[in-house]
Amino acid sequence: MQLPDDFIHSTRQLMGDALYATLEAGLNANPLVSIRLNPFKLKAGTFNVHGTESPVPWCPNGFYLAERPNFTFDPMLHQGLYYVQEAASMFIDYVARNVVQQPVRMLDLCAAPGGKSTCAYSALPAGSVLFSNEPMRQRAQVLNENILKFGVPHCFVTNNYARDYQKSRLLFDVVLADVPCSGEGMFRKDAGTIADWSLAKVAECTALQREIITDIWPCLKPNGLLIYSTCTFNAHENEENVAWIAEHLGADFVSVPVPEAWHITGSLIDNHPVYRFIPGKTQGEGLFMAILRKRNTPETEGVFAESYAQQPISSKALAALNVRSHGPLPDEIKGKTALPHQSKALSIQFDTAAFPQISVSYAQAIAYLRGEALTLPTDTPRGIVTLRYANSPLGFVKNVGNRANNLYPQAWKIKSTHLPDTPPCIIQHR
Ligand SMILES: C[S@@+](CC[C@H](N)C(=O)[O-])C[C@H]1O[C@@H](n2cnc3c(N)ncnc32)[C@H](O)[C@@H]1O
Image (cartoon, helix red, strand yellow):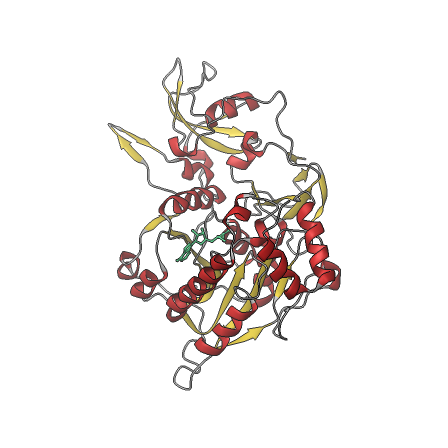
């Protein structure tokens, strides 16, 4: 891998020769493959993860796989039974479990495609409410799809900038800001990030990150937690920025205990507790994370002690936001028929008795996910039918007798026409 000279020079200066050499070797090795199970859909003890190398130590739902299967052709991925996520990012699970003890209202400000949102939600105490936000329209669509596949209630997907949140006047107990960054930690996974990288980009990102946190700061309640993360190595976007937040916005660092065996690196420039994942040393891609608690002022002391998880969310607050979903999308009314949206089938609250159900084969499941019409057994009732695959809802068809019309959302379809000879076998029900 040809790394930019400026990157080599500045990173070696920051890390020292030995750690830099470890990083460089790591960047030249193959990226690890890992998945995270959806604990709301897969009950522990009811399935096996195939090809598992080992669990991800900091996330109970995470597993490294021995090789990279063709995930696209696994219906279980589309059913939201698991999510493909690189392991370092799953550290948010460990942090959330350590620093959040009661249900919270949490905002994930920079959430697309949704890996940390769904990971964090799995780790939050029951009764927590998540706002998963992404300002870029197209990325917000992907986020919405992933959250709807995850299928949990109490999750709002929004398409806004931090300033819109200020206008909503919503307050949060926890804000996760996985800010846009220069992406050095993604060099081995995405060669495009190397071409895009420059010292000027690092400076630009550093300034943008400060602006984003400043804009969202009024929405974090005093005593609330900011979890700040990037997937880059330089100290400007990391240690320097969190020190700036602590000093200029008013916050204190919060630490979590991490076992030495995980090989997480601390701060490279000061003594603040921060968590760095360095490929070659830690089992994952590059990640930086720090946790800060917003300081109280004498006026706010004690005022915000209650969690916001149970507080009603006013329609006025929601009107300030572009809410893409809050649970399954509504039925589409066509003539006399209510066509249920796919997200209803994938919701963990779906009443499976609502429609007749038919189990389908692997080939039928893939045909369905491609948006093709199916032919169901002749005794299948007419009207809306739920298709099931691997013991879980797959989606809906409208059975008209000689064929079953596909209700899978156009935008979610598998585009490829290839059909593997054998299904990828990642999760097996026992
Ligand atoms: C590192 S990615 C987030 C990855 C995501 N947290 C996950 O784990 O799946 C950063 C995200 O920030 C979004 N972003 C860009 N500008 C932003 C802004 N001004 N405010 C908030 N988010 C922004 C990007 O579009 C991108 O989706």
